[in-house]
Length: 332
Ligand SMILES: Cc1cc2nc3c(=O)[nH]c(=O)nc-3n(C[C@H](O)[C@H](O)[C@H](O)COP(=O)(O)O)c2cc1C
Image 1 (tube, rainbow, N blue to C red):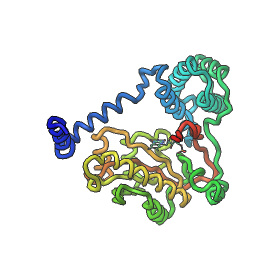
Image 2: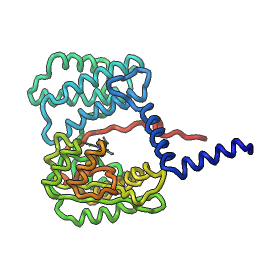
Image 3: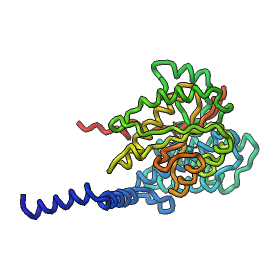
Image 4: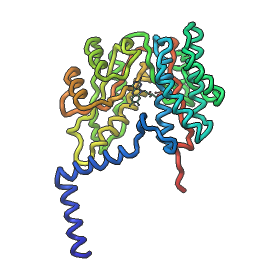
C-alpha cells in the first residue's frame, strides 16, 4: 500500500473510531441523507411516486383513525380531506388508479355515509370534490373501519392459523382501566423474549395508571386527539443509553422497537387492547415528559402504548397493508 494511502486510512481510523467529532460528523451525514429522502407535505412532487404515496397513506389514515374514535366528530377533518383529495388527483394525473386510491375511496365512502346517517350536511364544495373522486376511482379495497367482536377475536387469536399476529389491531376505545396489574407483569415476562443487540436487553418499561400523570404525559405526547379520555393505563418503553456504545444510536430504537412489538403481542395475548403511540417530538418535550413521568436522563423514550380492557364490540381502523411483492424483493 502506498505511503499516502496508509496515512489516509490511519487518519480515517483515528477520526471515525477514536474521536467524538468523527461520530458527530456521522450523525450529520445520516441526518442530511435522511432529509434528502423524506417527503414535504407542502412541496409534493408528482414525479416522486413513493414520497407521494406515503404522504397519501399518512393523510387518509387520519380519516380512518378519526372514524374509529369513540366519539366521532361530525364533519371532522375538512381541510385534511381537501389536502388528501388534492394530492390524490395529483397522483392519479400521472399514475392513474391503484389499490391506494381504492382504499382512500372506501374510507371517504364511510366518511360520507357516517355524516349522512347522522344528518350532518357536508359543505357543497367538499361534497363536489369527493363525488369527483368517487367517479374517478373504485372502492374494492377495504378502508375506513371494521367492527370487531371480542369473542370471535379471541377465538381467532387462539387458532393456529391466525394466531396473535393477524388479530392484533391498534385499539383506541376501551371498556375501562386494566383490572389486574399481573397481566402487565405477565406480558413483560413474555415480551422480554425479544432479541436484542448482544442480548443486552437495554429496554425499560414504565407503567402508569394514575390518571393525572397520564393526562399530563399525553398532553405533551400529542398523538391521542379524540381518545385521550379513554386512556387509563399507559406504558412508556425506553432504551437505557448506558446499554449502548459508539455507532449504536439507532440500535436503541431497533431493540426498543422489537421489544415493543413483542410486548404489544404479549399484551394482546392477555386480552388487553393496545394502541402504539409515537415519540416524535423535540428533546425539550422529551425532557418535560421524562420529568413528569419520573424517567431518568439516561433513558431514551422509544414509544408509548395506550392500554385498556377490550369492549365486547368495537371499531378499529382497517389500515390495509401493501402487497407482499411491494415489500419483498427476492434476490436470486
Ligand atoms: C411507532 C408507532 C407510533 C404510532 N403513533 C400513533 C399515535 O401517536 N396515535 C395513534 O392514534 N396511532 C399511532 N400509531 C398506530 C398506527 O396508526 C397503526 O399501528 C397502523 O395504522 C397499523 O394499524 P394496526 O396497528 O391496527 O395494525 C402508531 C404506530 C406505531 C408503530
